[in-house]
Image 1 (spheres, rainbow, N blue to C red):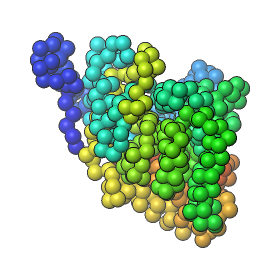
Image 2: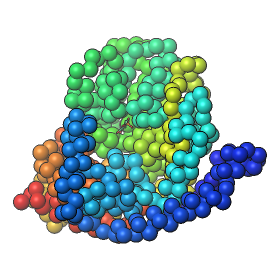
Image 3: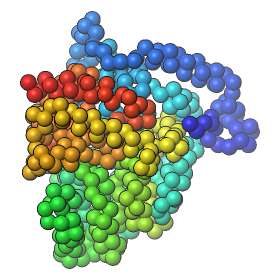
Length: 492
Ligand SMILES: Cc1ncc(COP(=O)(O)O)c(C=O)c1O
């Protein structure tokens, strides 16, 4: 694994400044080593799933009630962490230990209490301020930008990068770049079922009615159908793609020069881990290019998790992308853009870019992703995807009654309909994708020791964003033992 250095400033500055000497000091190094040793020793106690401790039940319930009271609504999951985990296992404050297969919706790719990552976050926390900002900053956010841009330079024209604290914020920044470049074109093209975050604008573009209740609709969005494998199988892939391309041309004819951008999720996240072949995206992106419509690729959920670091690379779409947003596993989020989209002064700024801990952790994660053997056909992510699929197929074979046809599919379509996603974005679909049973299954699985979540707007799927950075292939049968126990409670 890549050794990360204490310094982000360079050798000379480290020697000549007091700050540099502090960061390189033996005392700091000793402190770090003590922290990491203690962390390792405690984490080593966490080796398998265990149930909650009865003696903690009352106190845990009180914590849950306080959290719900503070927030104004009960927590979706009865989850409060104890502050420690070990790889893919995490301890909750009720003393239980669970497999974490959702990782805060994809944030903890290197699992829980990873010693190298903790070391970086401590280092990021001892610099002079908590948060870096646009006016006054350490180098950390720029180093994160450089690392992202170096990876992006391999297959795209992305040249610059702007860091911000949340996915929805970097999406807001992306949209502003597109609006400004277009000279104020007011419309946005987006896919049906897309998700983009929860600011006022992103809630409007995101295609979930429940997420925009009570929000005045001020953003003009034209929704496009996403690729539908079943329709493509019925009518032929080329014809299906042609029909969707005609749909796009229809919007452009109806509103000439009115579209600032088309926002793509190359794997739909909240929408159901829906994928599409390269030619689908090429067709739509080519039309965008012909009409000066920005191609914006939202990889906030997909970045790092597919079989290439940027999902657009895996699909060979680097030549098309104008703006790309990343987040979640990068800890601090970012908007990357080409020279042509570099905005005028004043468009992008904010008090915060990100915390030192988040930026340093993000840099560490990017280095580890780059040379950890994760990507490509035979990479670790592809191996895990195959192991996951094998587990689902074995479960379907053992328990066929739990896996009726999904939607319009038949059992003969099982491999396609029952198990899907791309790389480390994994889904499977028991109980015909019925919402109530999937919801009950998630709760039962949580009680049986595995944290999962759902995706899709009907059919609903069980979603996994596992910590593939620390998971072993031999963990999969252990995870699926819990899954099977959980599903059994809903099936019976
Ligand atoms: C594709 C996509 N875009 C944007 C976001 C919003 O990110 P955040 O929740 O950090 O604001 C998400 C979050 O799930 C996402 O999946």
